[in-house]
Amino acid sequence: MKAYVPEGSSNTETLWQTALEEIRPRISGSNFVRWFRPLRPVSLLKDQFVVEAPNLYIKDWFEANFSAVLAETISRLANRPLRVIVQVSSPKPTRPTSSHKGAQTPPPPTPPRQPNFPPQYTFENFVVGPSNQLAQAASLAVTKAPGGRYNPLFIYGGVGLGKTHLLCAIGNTLIRQARPWRIIYTTSEQFTAEYVAHIRTDKADAFRRKYRSECDILLIDDIQFIAGKDRTQEEFFHTFNALYDSGKQIVVTSDRFPHEIPGLEDRLRNRFEWGLIADIQSPEFETRLAIVRKKALQQNLSLPEEVAVFLAENIRSNIRQIEGALVRLAAFASLHAQPVTLPFAQEVLSGLLSAPVQNLQPEEILQEVASFYGLRVTDLTGKRRQRQVAEARQVAMFLTRELLGLSYPQIGQVFGGKNHTTVMAAVKKISELVETEGHFKSIVEALKGRLGPVR
Ligand code: ADP
Ligand code: MG
Image 1 (cartoon, rainbow, N blue to C red):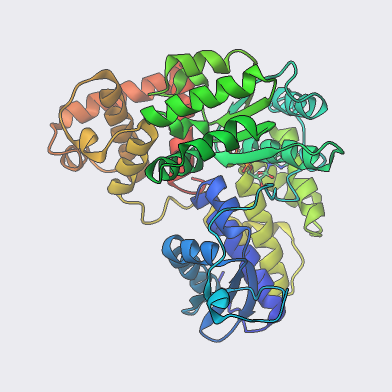
Image 2: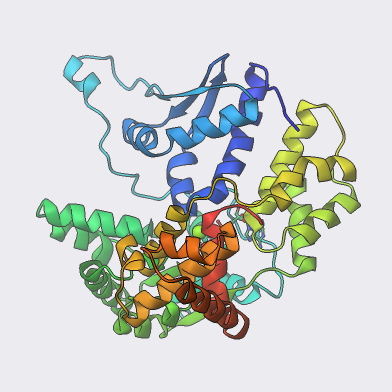
């Protein structure tokens, strides 16, 4: 179903929300929170879409990294070419503009001291079921007694199952407590980048002060990306010890169990086991249905029971996609002035629920798998037989077969001219492992989740 979205203020917001839901599953949750959340849609014109960023830092970063994906998405949704214009919101006048030098100095590129958690990521908004009960209860317990029994708390689970939501719920709850906790929320990627930047400018002390002595609660999202980065792991190890020894709370999330993160140092694995390790599994039907109902309510979308059941039955593995589907339904219902009926929902969501990944290229699979294992693409196309490399290569071959349906010889070509029998053996081996070993299944699911929307 194609929509032509006319210019205008109400459509600005609708288009923005719909685009966010489309983009969200395609980028990491932390990037989404960091770079998309702070933006506000301003206007939708004939050939451009204007958004506002709170500062120059976010504007620059967004333009360099995400403008293109936003432009592509909104152009497709609105069915006409749209450019994205990012403007910096005008600062509140504090004193009369005096020196023109002052006016031109960009705001400092440091994020605010107290993190800004997305307001909707609360415990009240988190639907509890058997699949996530332990992680939810442990997170809640942390807010009652930070640094207590569940320290560190290690939450792991597949993509879009609520890890970031719980982490931010902890943050949102603690921020509201009378005691002024000093909270740091970061991702392991951000932690790494920040550490490297401080080292480069000889400011390791400032970094250590911030993380070791000026922090009561450290929330680190997606810790798996620290794997393979030796100096950062070293730094994190000492950060961990300093915080732990002074009774500060540490919560980390990961897409995998500590022992299944390749390239993670044993001493860190060992530390993560000191507290509680809680998993989040894919929700079962009843929980999915409860989530559908809750999210619909939040969006003020009236959803007949049969449509709710249709969604809960068809979107199984990733809650972010449930939200995406609801936003899409709401947007189409409002743009076409139609009530949400089952046939309407089936039509609007048909592409979302059954289409194969569009335009996925073998190179993207190689890149995603390589980064997942902390390797380079050339390791996968090369000949090294080290266990870790061989496993990554076989998983990548398996995914290429499964997602793109290429022939064995074609896959051999993609992987640097390997024999088709090698590819066949790899695909067979991984299919078997996926059946028999839970952690392989989660690795493959996680990778599929990163490579694209529902299949
Ligand atoms: P992850 O970090 O595990 O990839 P997120 O925390 O980003 O996943 O969750 C994806 C989306 O699904 C978020 O918008 C979140 O609010 C929602 N979500 C996940 N689990 C639940 C739940 N149990 N109840 C309500 N919403 C949920
Ligand atoms: Mg996340």
